[in-house]
Image (cartoon, rainbow, N blue to C red; front, side, top):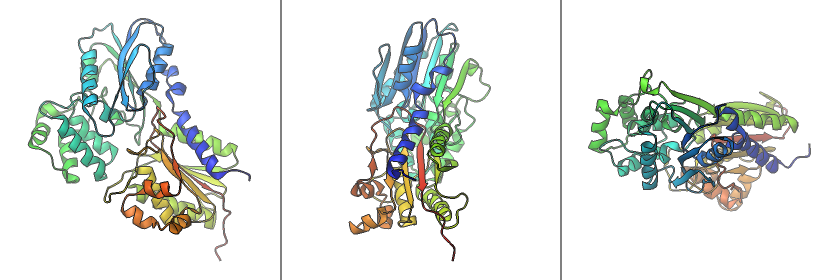
Length: 426
């Protein structure tokens, strides 16, 4: 089968991104009646690209404000685009969050609001609750990012420390009609977790947020602890009449991207195996993938080569070292260490937003000779893994994937291409 393995993996990654891009998925979900005035607000790495679609499709008066990550903006004529920091919020994110909140306050029941939501919104739309400072949120956010907490756990804490998340933004819009269009970057596609659910009811509690902070040994100032012990810190709960006119629509999710990649695999003659949305420590998830790849190569199970193993989701990294690297580089480094050059196995791991954690790469590529080439350079995969230095490892191999911001985000994408035929057990 004549295929360039690395090029094919890059094409799969591009296919996954395109399947979730606002230009492809948003227009069909907008209200059929696109006349009259609409206020557009938004937060996330896809917010600017989503705003462009609304501007192009809406027939009536359009105005509004969206916030996206630095470098992820796009030119809009009627909707203001502001850039702020991610994954740790900054003053720009706090300022724009305050403006967004004020923009939708004091609306009438004749008003319509379109809220464009995507991954990254939790950090970008940062409006601390009463008595909590931006510095408090920043320090807690940094600690959570290093702790190994899941995105659901992180966002439970974030929404209870916020004046805008956990349904509070949606309630502020009352009695206007709110249409939230979301691109999911979380396992399970839970509306309450995507960007910490600014416009949807939230069943989690402040007590749960406190328990999460305790579980991961995160010290918090007295002001934060006192707030979380106060009834005022509770988010907007299911059944609250303030959300009666708030509607939520998921327009893109990781599964769509995995299915699009699977179609491309079949067209190229490869059998796809979709493992789905996964969570867990990146290095441990990689070991499971390595075990499946080894079983394919050695025994032709659970499917025969040539094939592609596909997975998505959001893994975590418990930071122990001082190296550089996001979730995907860590995954790929652990996979390399586990397979140690298993013939015929190529792999790509990348973040569909184009940024692996806080680095400038989307991810990296592993080839069957990656392990040996690194050894020749004096690099030990296990040592680099101990130092959380996936970026440095693959940079040395000239194997980083740099896409620039994609302006969408359905989380991580992983593809393991296996060309080797099954081997005889004997």
